[in-house]
Length: 419
Image (cartoon, rainbow, N blue to C red; front, side, top):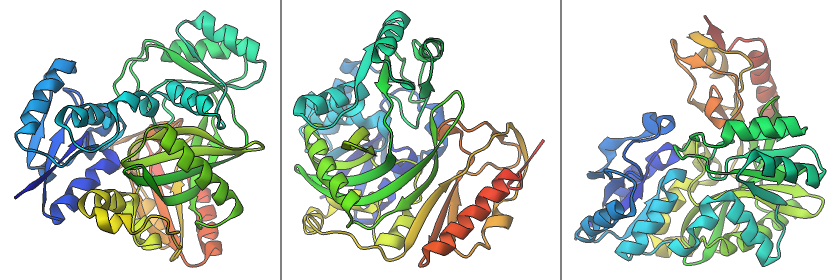
């Protein structure tokens, strides 16, 4: 008997799942969470990897009730999100069809950044002081009363550092609020309010996990180096895959396992960003899906698996996945993820990345670099970076040397020739 799995919004890293499920003999159903695929994700969708495609006529609950009835006829084993936009609809359909997943009753804790922090605060673990503003007057009043600058202003349910801004004055808070409120964010949702938070200071980290029936497997821990950008917030500079064991890692794992449980993440992948502060780890945000924009084969080379392969294993081979619980991963090699940034805007005449970077001793691969004729924009978030490079080598010093070389080429404008 055929086994079916539904993936809601199989975009970004979510596009990698269907081929793995099909290799394991499963049939794949794709469900869109909206009638139109958000522009940012259109190029990543691989429709040919699915056996059935389902698209709603509108985003009403009645429409998804109809889709749930269609799905019941196929008796899918699971309904899971592929990317951030699919989290709520996957929870909804899973509850309607009766498949194992994460509870619809706690969906808001996983999609709404304000609700997420309030849940942590209520549970008594480290959280971020915050305020949800519905007017610019409310935003200015809270920022003034906080009395600590900068203040972080951002959408409550977007991703990829979309419209996140560090504000140092009341005027900047007003400007940031007005650029967010009432506008559509990168996930295609209208910003009906604006989130303000105290800025955290410290080293940032990424913790990825996959869960099964409330038990959490930490799959990767990365240090996440950021760079501040004027009139924005922080952009990715590089992520360094860390060993599982270490004083900092121990604190991150303990805090993160508690946080995942508080947020109702019982099944499937999660991607979390944290800050190690003087008071210990503090969650910036968690997403109940795989990390986006990753070259998962690079992670496989370092660990023997990736966030993608373990997510698939959790569903296709649950007994094998359960046998991993409690085990600590070991690095086979060193791995860094370098995010390119541009201070310039224009049209690409020539992309020199292949020519300049493939000869670097630690070069593993690159993704999302623009081709001739594409536009490059000033980098202010994940969506505006001009590419990602993975460096993999036994010698960390060699990776550091190659990283310095990449940044030199970048600063000299050698990676891309612009019109």
